[in-house]
Amino acid sequence: MTWRFALLIEPAAPEDPRTDFADTFAVIDPATPALSVGELSTQRGDGIFESIGVVDGHAQEVEAHLDRLANSARLCDLPEPNVAQWRQAIVHAAAASPATGEGVIKLILSRGVEHGPAPTAWVTAAEARDSSDARGRGIRVVTLDRGYDSEAPARAPWLLLGAKTLSYAVNMAALREAHRRGADDAIFVSSDGFVLEAPTASVILRFGDRFVTPEPGGAILHGTTQLSLFEHLEALGHEVAYEKVPVAALAAAEAMWLVSSVRLAAPVTAIDGAEMAMDAELTADFNRYLLSPRD
Ligand code: PLP
Image 1: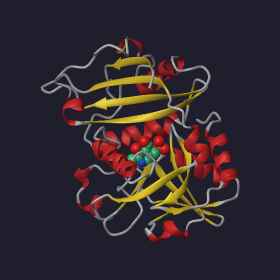
Image 2 (image 1 turned 60 degrees about the horizontal axis):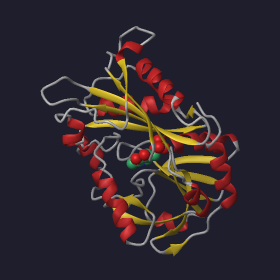
Image 3 (image 1 turned 90 degrees about the vertical axis):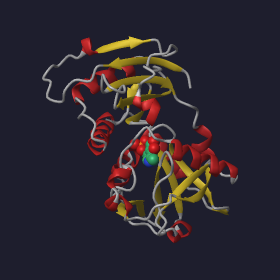
């Protein structure tokens, strides 16, 4: 990843009425160290983040990402983000993003430095990795047990399962396990046999003219890409649904995608070693739509 831009933010209170937060921003060199060694984001992964896709300098689905950032903050007992301040920081980052091609803007809100000051926040902009292979040729996936049952989110909210926290070590370990098994990616399943999500993407299944995704319900992230694609599918006259999806349904699906903000729609070509047909035409339509400017 080529970093292009980084901005440190002094988080403003949510009720701060300013319309210009420029004096709370400090542009820094993304190649030089900037965080305190006491940072709880690096010591404990204690913070939240968002990754926003950028296409030809346009940051995609900003409001959906800001809504999820606020939701993650609530779940993690972090101070509520001042949305106007973050929106302005995103405008700066988008201006520093590649004017043509794809980029990624990250928003990070950390619990801060141990014993204060707290919290800390920053935004970065970088060029996106090339995802054309995953989009065009598809990906092979394996199912991996996430190690909790579908009632765990209600029983143990401190697991923060619906928050996009910085603690992604488990998600990265699952990707390594998928690679060890000869696959490109993984789909987490609950210990009582329901489909959850991929380590960095949401799952969409097609059954005839019906498109289904596992209901968020606190166990998984509500993907902004999935939300946007469901709007697109509904506008095309298709039926969309949030459901509890049993693992057996994966084999019955006529097509399947992992969708996320930067890689966009990656069609699944094999699941646990069983080949699966990919819908090249619909995938191309999904990615054309996802690469068009979206607010
Ligand atoms: N689920 C997880 C665990 C993720 O990390 C992500 C994105 O990184 C997603 C789903 C998809 O979310 P989005 O479409 O907003 O990128």
